[in-house]
Amino acid sequence: MPRLSKAERHRVRLTLNGRTVDGEAEPRLLLTDFLRHVLGATDTHVGCEHGVCGACTVQLDGVPARACLTLAVQAEGARIRTVEGLEPEPGRLSILQAAFRRHHALQCGFCTAGILMSLDFYLSENRDPSEADLREFLSGHLCRCTGYVPIVAAALDAARRLREEEHHA
Image (cartoon, rainbow, N blue to C red; front, top):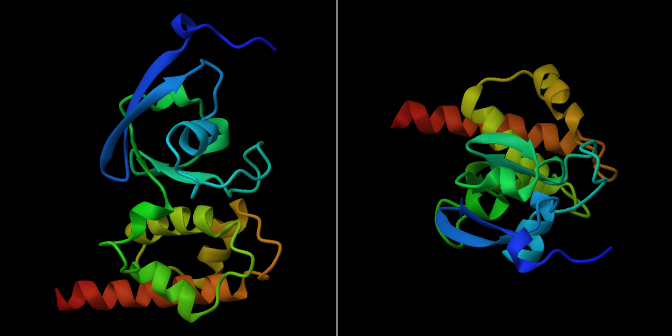
């Protein structure tokens, strides 16, 4: 397939984890490929490339989105947050990330970034989820390693700690 000429590419400018960035994208370039190969944000994983596995989930203007189903040009002017954007400050894990560490909620880690991005959004909207609610919510993510038990335990732990943090604030 021939490459498009420079004139047929589009400048895409967006905010990535709080930083304004830009790059060129062909009209059909997926957001996953733009993030990874143009912007160097390799924390966004590419799994099934059909929107089924959830590994590529990022937050697009604050809402979880499958980056493999989004064209880069659709993200023009958007705020994109990837798993690297979860740290409250460099070198310090978020409450959710720390809970994943405590509960050993990852093995190979391939699905983890997408799951964290979805759960970060979910827990910001729902501070007191039930185990059943979390399992249903996580049904949009495929993890072949953990069996979901430690992921759910970590999410429940993080929800509890977030409630405690709000109560003490």
